[in-house]
Amino acid sequence: MTAVPDTGSANTWLYAVVQAPSGALPESLTGVAGEPLRLLDVPGLAAVAGSVPRADFDEEALNAHIQDPAWLERAVRDHHRVVCVLGRTHRVLPMRFATLCQDDARAVELLTERHDRLLAAVDHVSGRTELGVKAWSAPRGAEASGPADGQSPGAAYLSRLRARRDERDRATQAAMEQASRVHARLAGVAADWVQHPPQPGEATGRDEPMLLNCAYLVDDDRLPGFRSAVDAMAAETAELTLELTGPWPPYSFAGHERQDAGEGESA
Image 1: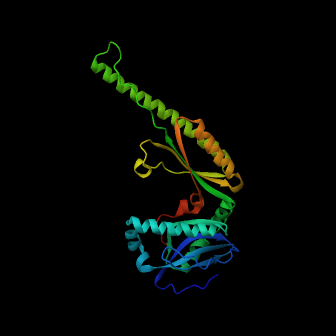
Image 2: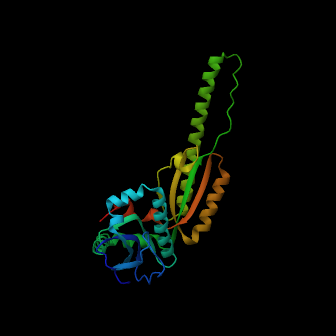
Image 3: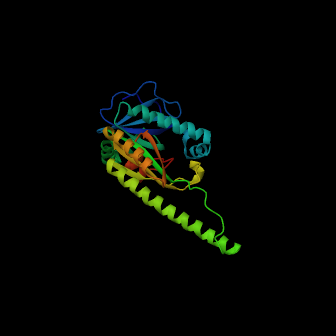
């Protein structure tokens, strides 16, 4: 455990929980404020923490920072970098971005309160990797627009509208059914999964609706088989466009985080 700095004017930022004995942290590893990192020990576990200036990371300042896209992108990348480096040598459970405590004593108290859940969560993700799969309804081709024989222009127009609506409904239903089959197949390969809300087109840059946005926790020795299953289903279905992302640290499977913490949590 590294020496604890004077934290009288600092908050404690938590990056991850690791299983003890955890070994030394890389000396060159720094956090979101460029601060050195240290371990805070509780029985069987240790939290990777850094001291960040309270003036820049109290609730008001943090909320202002989060509204700045450039600051937010850099800080998220720094937090993610710490988690990824830790994952090379430790059994690591990521903490949600901007999990802050008033000081080390409060951080240790928080970890002690959640000790059993944290220990179980670290064990659950050990030897496993998070992969993401997103599915969109596949783009449809151009629709016929010519009038039917014997119809007036007005009737033909209404007929085309109904046909297009019905075709959209059929295509959407077929895509949703296919997305459910994709998920069922991948869930059978994975050790665990978490369904995230579909992302809007503004975030994805796609016009088609997102029908699946799921994180899968996969045993490391089953990763090739999982990727092959995604590739096979992408080739088999005409109703969906699939995207595989990762590997990621198991952010989606820190169960205590999903239940208890929020962005900018303070304790």
